[in-house]
Image (cartoon, rainbow, N blue to C red; front, top):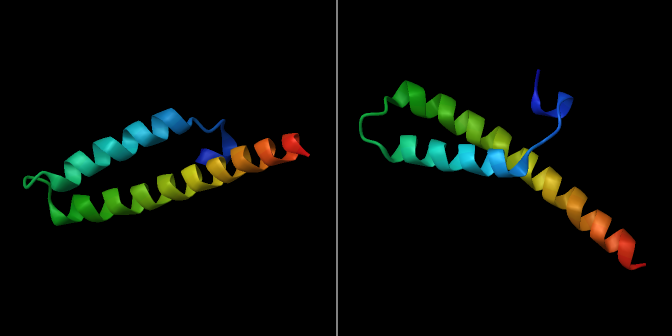
Length: 64
């Protein structure tokens, strides 16, 4: 199940991004793992952007 198939939780996504950043900065993290972490972070960032656009559009629609 991917993110689009379940309710998106912005707070959890940001927390996961924080965890990923810590792992990437850890010298003990292997390059193989970093590649997978970067891929996951891109997915999370895109999902967060989509969510924020939806919220913005919802707010703007309410102002009209």
